[in-house]
Amino acid sequence: MNFLAHTALALDAGGVWACQDEEIEGLLAGAIIGDFVKGRIPEDWPDPLRAGVALHRKIDALSNLHPAIQTACRTYPDDLRRFAPIFLDLLADHSLARSWSDYYDVEIGGLTKACYEATDSYNRRHKDGAVSANATRFVAYMQDVDLLANYNDWHHIEQGIRSVVRRLKKDLDLTHVLTHCAERVGETDVLLQQLYPDLRSAFTEWNAFDVISAR
Image (cartoon, rainbow, N blue to C red; front, side, top):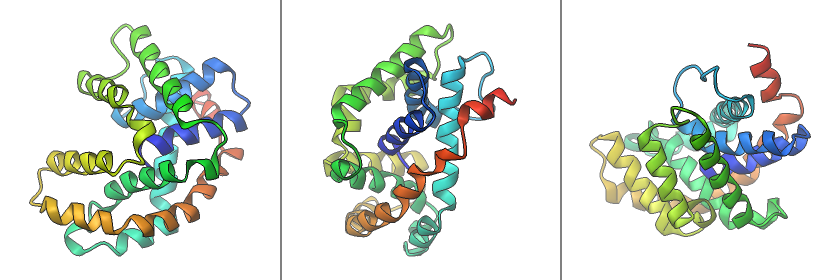
């Protein structure tokens, strides 16, 4: 799952866990920041933010192990199969953005604005900054183009794929990757229908706040 799915699932989890506003803010910030935090979650971070990062990691684990994801990855060509989960993340956000009203009553723009504000708030509040300088620049870019609310625009998916290929520094043919991913959009729409309800229901028996309090 990519950023839009992570933020939407954080909102779902906050509702299931009957979170207060400050806790939901932490879950939303963690949905973004979690992609940039490696290793142990800093213990001096506020519990809501730590729970948000823990939730981010749980979502990644659940989606990576989901049978529908594993089956889809195996259908990618040999030269792309290793990186299929990364491309699927982007395509899943494209599918979710285009079918947003099938899952949520809340306006997508309202959620994305809350995510940006939550991330900014935690980053300012933490004495050393809650994310790296590179991550801070990316979050600023997200806000400038309102990336979360515009994943329905293929241009942004293409930009994400270009960035992934550049970051991987592998001998990948960009045109081949872009063409193949564009051809997978319809399949990913079906995949999301299989996967997303399972992810949304996963937080009735698992609570990120319980996990961090037990450590």
